[in-house]
Image (cartoon, rainbow, N blue to C red; front, side, top):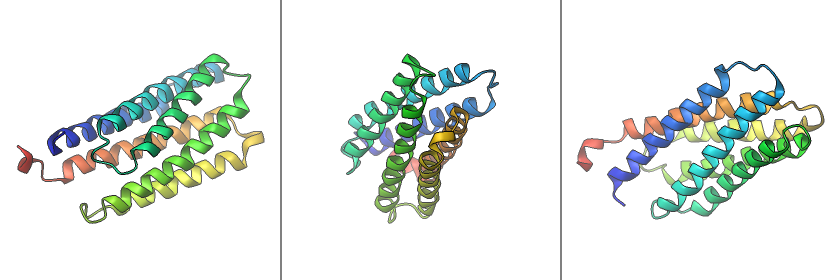
Amino acid sequence: MTEKRFLTSLLTEGTFLLALGILMLILPKITDITFGFMICLAFISYGGYRIINSIMLRNFSRHYILTIISGTLLTVCGAMLYLAPLINIMWIISVAGMYFILESITTTATAVMTKNILWWWQGFIYLSILQLLIGICTIIILPSAALWFVGVAAGIDFMISGILMINIYLGTNYSRFN
């Protein structure tokens, strides 16, 4: 896989994440069930994309196993929400909290890997701190946590992650790979 293909996959993933994040934040939240269905579709689609993308880009990342585990956790959380949207709500919210904590570790590893490549690698550190705070808050307020909190937090996380990935694509000298 060439660098050009890697950068194109970053642009694709960033655009996909930005669109999912915007959809999760602007769609009307009529009931918990419809919002839960939107969250489950977003989690399943992005989790599956992460698994496939990390397998395809395993030569460019040292922590692709962690990304596969993170994508699997997100897909399982979405599937459980789809199968029983109101019965397993405590378990689903706790798995979503664990996903955010694991994603924080993955984002920190990405920041350390790109420290010598990107001049604004600190954006990943800020994103990992935000993901860690979302994960801890989700687990701490678990008995009273609502599904809308997980959905809004995931929407914000997806948007910021997408913006950072698009910035990686735009910030690199893409013309040198042509």
